[in-house]
Length: 72
Image (cartoon, rainbow, N blue to C red; front, side, top):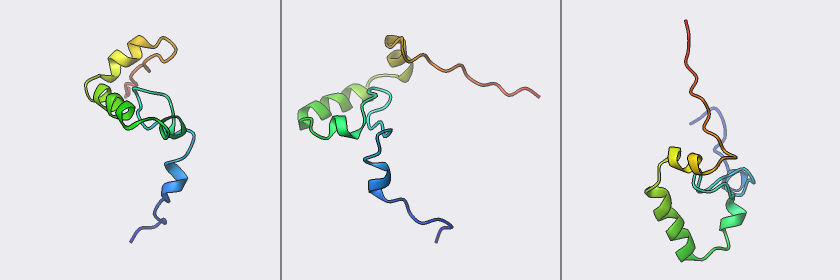
């Protein structure tokens, strides 16, 4: 039992801000749902072999966020 109801798939899976292949692609579910199986597999292979830092370095419009360091 939980204090809140379980999330419904339709509430998050089809949401416009659900970036299904983040950080490789900023495209949401709607942009991927009609792609071929081969296109999706190719993207998944690329995602599995690419680091987040290198992806952001290639995209000047998506700079890496500076790490937040707690000070006491």
